[in-house]
Image 1 (cartoon, rainbow, N blue to C red):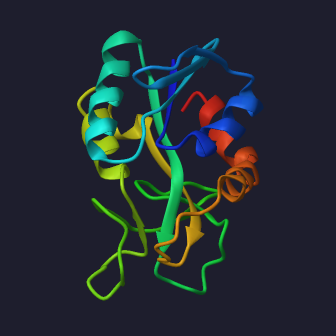
Image 2: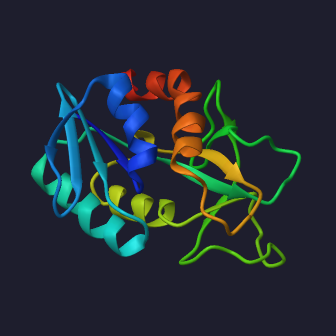
Length: 175
């Protein structure tokens, strides 16, 4: 089974629609499923990510894990909406370094990576206890250039949706 993790519902909804996933559970976290794809919406932060990602691995026979979400980017030359894989190099998707933080950054003076999010590090940590690195993907879409304002839901939906064709190749591939 392929497992997709998102923190936000607005990150998940375009994926849910694309793969025609059905809602299986809404509390304590959302689960969507169809055939061999399962998607969860954990909520923001490393604690929820750790708890719910681990729960999915214990309940289902996961063969591939994919974290999908938005990220801030310190390089203003990188376009909003750009897709990156941050934990490995892929043929048709850009690669960039990523730092996971506990709260939105006010500035980038201490940031040593190109991208910043709040869940990927914990997702990788938990997933690597159950899968080999070759079966784990972190896919991030640039939503801002380290702006602390929260992006609108429709905006997040749109930038995720625009990258679904490339993301879907990873979801449906047999590795």
